[in-house]
Image (cartoon, rainbow, N blue to C red; front, side):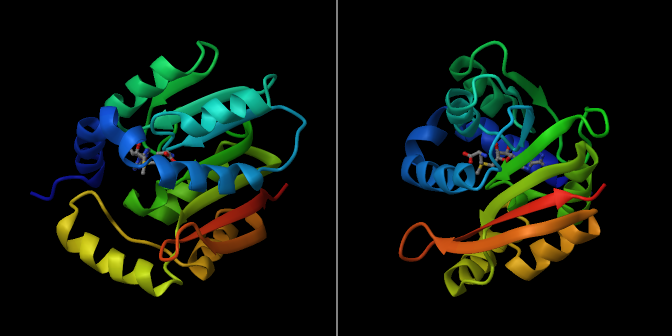
Length: 209
Ligand SMILES: C[S@@+](CC[C@H](N)C(=O)[O-])C[C@H]1O[C@@H](n2cnc3c(N)ncnc32)[C@H](O)[C@@H]1O
């Protein structure tokens, strides 16, 4: 029997949760800064972070937009536990899979996801689900490793063999197409390096009316 990817991700991140912030400090700081810099400006509304991990992005967002209603979703109870300790009580943290979010249709103004997409079994279905919970005219902001870079393609190959949670990296064209097919109009799809070798991308897309 094939073990579902969600169970492998959960097991991996439950084990990593207490060490995650320390081990990935520089990577998280840079990728989070790139993601937050691309969030559309206010007005403060409802913001959902999918694959929110230990809540570092939400923590910064809470300081930048204190009036916003912030919600995080993640598969890993361990990561959610660390986020819960970090964040104030009015930030909700929910155990959920990106492909099946326990939220009403059109209930968020911004849906963000950073460094989670490469774990999703079905990225197209996940992005459709992010678009479902987004109000028409709202924005999706997705950051992940970028397959356009050679180093990322090599890492993807290695991780497919060595990391049981890893699924695949996407390139900018695929991410743009998935967002379009999810009913969103891409506003920008940027690629950039956060170290000399580590290539990332951030897509911003607006949900069609
Ligand atoms: C590399 S961490 C990134 C955490 C955080 N966004 C950050 O930038 O530090 C990936 C996170 O995505 C979560 N994740 C992976 N697949 C998921 C899915 N299908 N649905 C929800 N969360 C998922 C993992 O549990 C993990 O917490």
